[in-house]
Image (cartoon, rainbow, N blue to C red; front, side, top):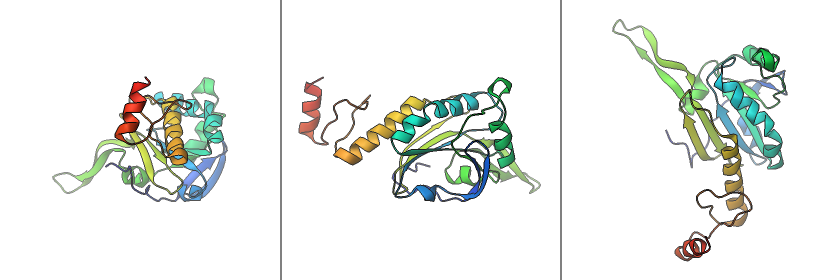
Length: 209
């Protein structure tokens, strides 16, 4: 499912915020009209690629915050698993020091609604319910604007870690377009020349390269 251009699915779920505080009914709706959101899924707590991504987001959290962007993670683990991982030292495989919210998708409904669940429920020949595939989320990432509309999405398979610098670049591109009305060409970075969305604008941009 491509969610770009559509409203991000609504949910209300348990989460852990500020590195160890339990909250109920956490929702991305709290950011509507206030912040852009980078909402990302990862497969599981206490794994291998996942902490490298989460810690990389934390390292660049100030970059997101100065752009008025909320970073929110989500996996199918319980809030208690999130809490335990957030309170485990890095040397022991933990992510202590991470401050952005981690949402619990224990029912897997959030992953399903964002279409990043790495499998699906089915029935066998005896009519018994079963799960086919991996009951975890792919590495999905969604950039959501202040109106709650998805403007960018990326979905990686389980072994493939994401680039946090690319997530920041996409935030910069979206915010530049929103503020200036100009579009951002290939490999554009903040501070570089963008272009008008016209044939003349493209020609002018290419002639300067």
